[in-house]
Every structure is written in C-alpha cells, then in structure tokens.
Length: 154
Image (cartoon, rainbow, N blue to C red; front, side):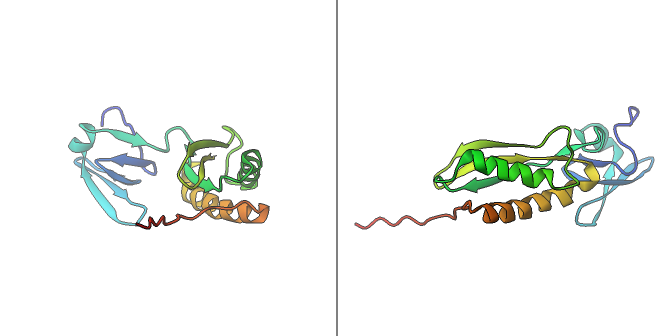
C-alpha cells in the first residue's frame, strides 16, 4: 500500500473482486461492486496480489463482439458500426474507436467492436454499444445470424 496504486473513487480489480474504492483503512480496503455489494478486502492480500486500476489511465476500452451473416458486405458493416460509435457522445474520439474482423466462425463473420470511454461511462458505453449495434445493423439491412441446428439423418 506504500506505493498507493489506487485512491478512493478508483475502479479496481483486486483479489478477484471488481469495484469502486469506497474506503482505505489501516487493515482493509472497501470496494463497492457493480452489483452494489460491499466487498471488504484485507490490505495484506491486496498488497501481495495483482491490482488492476481501470481508472488510472483516464480511459477504458470497451470490447464487444458482433457476428454478421457471411453474405454481409464487411466494409459496409464496419462503416455502419463505426458511425454508430462516433454518434455516441460518451465514446472518446481519441483513441479512435475500431471495428475489426476477428473470426470466421461457423455461421457468422465476427467483428470486435472497440470504443474507448472514461471509466465512469463504461457501463453506459458497453450497453449502448450492444443496443446501438443491433439497431444500426437492422437499419442498414445487415443480418445478425442466429445459431442453426444441424440434423444428420441416418
């Protein structure tokens, strides 16, 4: 704790607990989880473990994956998704958001959608990206496939 890797208000992950630092006491640190639960972690355990401070850099990347039909125009899909991200005022302009094909899956071409935001806007951007992706792709006529069951007749 000597190096002060976090302060009150920071969003951290320590001892497999994610939460905002509420209090730093002599023997414990109190975190409030996204589910609004109070987690009390011994400082010794925190000091001897890994700490991820999501707030320290002032921005976070939000990662989501979306699959589109193999018949979809990839260039158009990327344009539609980037336009959707740029229209969200909570998505940072720098670093610029990105959309990249990440996988040629069984029934879809998967793209990783990666906007950056301030840590306090993470959940708004995360859920906004998911909802915005569906709406933008629907409006553009780009199909999101659903899993298909394959039956083999003997």
